[in-house]
Length: 634
Image 1 (tube, rainbow, N blue to C red):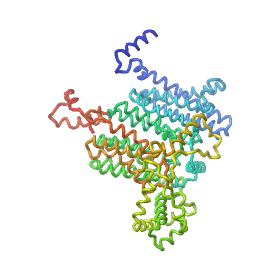
Image 2: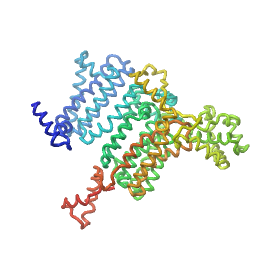
Image 3: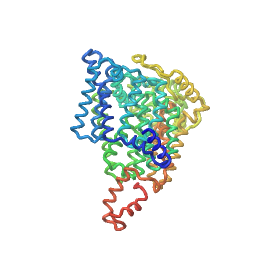
Image 4: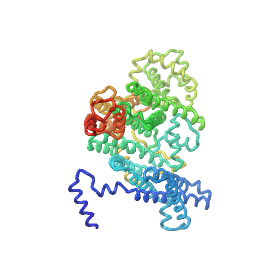
């Protein structure tokens, strides 16, 4: 039997080099019975965590407050409820049989732990008792197990081609900087989520996201894992879409290598900054914009796509305060280019408005979130200080107001073109918040009287965005050194000290002017993104082909006006979108690309509606119908 297996494998490799061999198809395309068996054992495995948490509760109620023993067990137990949906969706079981299988798995898992409290099997099933290495390995294998048991072949290939390589590389960074890097901003947000006292200085929505994940495990590690998975999954989605659009695999593999090996990716994805999920959400929004552009807006006509777009626009808006610019620009340009499809566009705007009112209203009121410092005030204060430093025109009446913020000599003394933090003190924030409208009026009057000084200042303060080389005598910050909170300081410790030392030395070298211009300075990446987007626009032959560039461009232009410091993290989105636009610009002309599943659905709908009124060919003539469909419907 083994001999026949290898003989069949040899024959498949010889005769079907261009097709997946039979053994591969058998491995991927599981039979329904085998899928049900796999899913049953997965439910059994997960239910063991529920059983363990119940046993610990009856044994010692106080154990529930030990995160390492209970919260993680409850988290994995809750995951088993997803088996109900998986059994129904993929194994094609009836509802009655699905419930019986789930109940049998839960009951057997609970009885297993009760009847065999001390055994090697018990030590395997209780995940919280495992070491960190085995814990993460078990978690990853479970996800991979269910994915392989339920996913189709093309989805499985995209997983191995586009998701797994960057995720595994990020996991090395995660182990080296375990459980993640935290800056001063990260510590402030961590203090808020542990004390449940939220302020909108740092976006409350991002703090709540971290709070949600830390309910399962009070550690920065869970946030780092979320960011790694989120980035790899969204990037894989974009690569999978571009592959279906006909982009050659070598180009996509180059993009995967870039995402996995670029040092900025690994260093940022394990850092607890709001810039990371914001940048990933902006990458997701760019992918959605590409889909809309390729289908001339028809992508939005499906309810699931409309909901996805509304959620992503809200994420971009709320993850960072400057996310307002790309979110609103996306909606405005969408209406401009695809206004003739006003129904889905209007529904998307209403959906976003509903998210906005829900988050800013009931949610903020429930958690008693306090208003933060307006980000625009940083740019205003910095520009006024520039006018004072260069002896510009400021009236005595304006100085009476400005002296309440800073004494007049300090406006000159503390001015640095590349940094505005020194100009803002905590004790003046309440005054600025209370008189913000008056502050804006004075600033506008000063700008009118000193336009040349303001223009030169903006060019200097925004040099991070447009200047490739490192400006002399300027402030520049790229990578974060971790500052662990005192409450969880014991959790911090590299799993690979030597690897961490190597990464630290690498980041120190890349931050020098000799190498920073093509690694940590984002201007080159912004210019390349614009070039590739323009190439795709010219190739499309339509004005609306430039639409996918607008969210990234709006983010950069908004930061030029209010960039507080020269930190690479503010322009992290261009690092993520560059490989996407590179592959998008090399997409074949639409007449050569094969239709996606969505385009096939649109084609079938159009044919059924239009063909009865057309005399060019008949619905019953399949050959002519295929010949007519030479290009995807875009």
